[in-house]
Amino acid sequence: MSIHLSKKTYDEMISHSIRSLPNEACGILIQEASSSSTDELHIHTFIPLPNHAAHPKQQFVIHPIDMIPYLTDQCRTIVGIFHSHPTASSTPSAEDLLTLWHTIPTYWVLSLQHEEKPDLKVYSLKKTTTTAYHKLSFVIGQ
Ligand SMILES: [Zn+2]
Image (tube, rainbow, N blue to C red; front, side):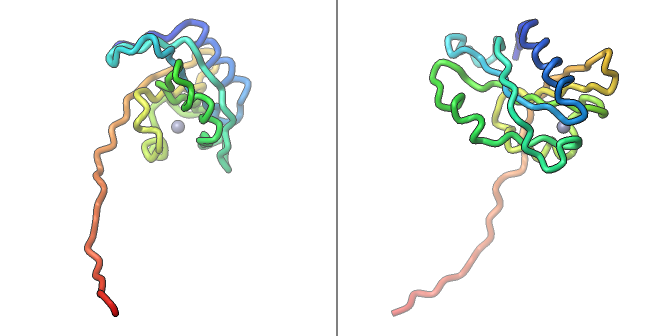
């Protein structure tokens, strides 16, 4: 997959993350629906979203309600989930891997560990555990 991120979008991700310190910042990345190729992303829009986490210095929570305007917009697709790590590297944390957003094609992490040299990385997440089932019993009554 080739990913094109506009300079403006990159700058907005950095400045929103610096403004949000000491907390983790988060947001979504949008692609115009006109570019519909699946192995090429053209990202020109960053939408900062509020971090609803109980401990926002160590985690981020994007509330689905904040995403609804973008989920129902036929002209724009959410192609990325973004958040910052104020003091850690840009490797996804164990908690990041529990994300509910693994179906979104790209997962972006910005490290501000060295604030003068922000480190942005992008990942694709694959959930490998399948849904398990176990047998219950039932009785047919009168
Ligand atoms: Zn994280």
